[in-house]
Image (cartoon, rainbow, N blue to C red; front, top):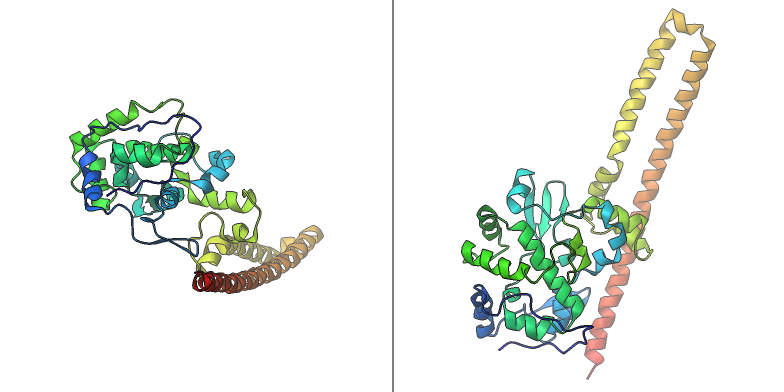
Length: 333
């Protein structure tokens, strides 16, 4: 039997944007009839979350995009205010679909990957919308935004095939029913102004490297964590970190090597041996190159030491936080 979340005051009367007799309601009703709707367990940081006992908290985690909304004024740096490209175009761009369950990572791309969140089956069900999503305006807007993003991603029958193969939609989904469902949904959405839709979805695909830069240089809250990890930390290996952030140094050193070699050849010629300006310039550039190389090595060492200390301290803090939670759980009646 479906668990209804506690009522949350809304600023205005909300209605489900899906049809009560929509052709995909059967997809969600199968889960409702079996009494299984959400996962048995998930985590919110270090805190254990039981979705079927606290469905509202789970739906917030499942649908809302607080991290992207916090930097909404900077999202123009990471993407265009256009609809995301359909799934078949993502393949033509050489991007592989990587499933994510975090709505803050939905349609975010990096190099040859694009992260996409599977569409929850409960968004097909009118009763679920009415009982659980229409009592909270922000939750309602986030759910509308996620559905809207799928109207962008699955525009053609070929897109539907890709979605089913990738696990984004149920393998039993039929093209005719999908089109009928979206037609009814889009009738309840203002596709021009996107009013009533989470403002994150006023932008389509977002570039992860730009989001990382925003979180490091103009974060919603300044912290060492945001500076080090950015929006989403792609790897905890030091080698991967230095390859991403210091590979440009190899190109600089290669250019310096070519210039120094050219200066050496020039000094060996009779024409330039007696040229005082050329010799002074060669001397100055050589000293500057040596200083730059030594300074770069020192910077890399300091960055590595800083990262090592940060991760060591963060691990220690996390261990203490988890132990405190466990002790609180043991001491509670």
